[in-house]
Amino acid sequence: MNESQAHPVLLLVSRRAKPGHEAEFEWLMAEFITSAEAFPGCLGAQLVHPGDEEAVEDTLYHALMAFEDASSLDAWQKSAERAAGLASIAPYIEGLAVVRGIAGLAHWFQPQTGAKHSQPPRWKVAVVTWLGIFPTVYLLFLLLGDVLAPLSLLARIFLLTALVVAIMTWGVAPQLTRLLKPWLFPSTTPKPKGAPVEPSP
Image (cartoon, rainbow, N blue to C red; front, top):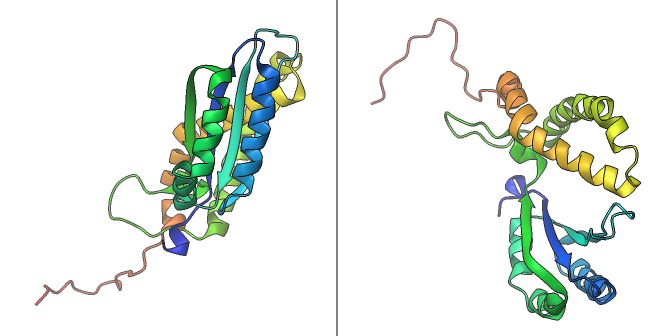
């Protein structure tokens, strides 16, 4: 894979533990996370426990795993280590797992239409990402600060980051890409002013 086209990928897997089997589930998931972290290409993994400690019925857990690129994630998903881990936790979960994949930030700034462009430089992606995230987070704090205040810190972070990703993906990033397209994807072959266009031989 071309290095300029390789981007970190975040995998979010949500599972619900069977009531009364939370301890077994957490112990086995800790082993599963350790196995994932040791896998080639994994940048890190973490198990997010139910956020609201006062909600006894809340048994939804979230496993966050980051990989160097899509190829590394694909290798993990096909690995014997993952298969063994899933088999070990299967007796202690109920319902189906919900899997969400989030590609690298640069994919927020792909041109939607027109000719295919190469990826913009990472520093430009970082600048435009900050321009989108800063006001988004600020507005969310203003609008939801009082609503989220009773929740635990982990629950607040989880909800806010989920909202930021959704708003950036379907709202802010496409608009910024449209507005800043000439800067993100400058033309590499500008036509000289006044030069006639000759037909190709």
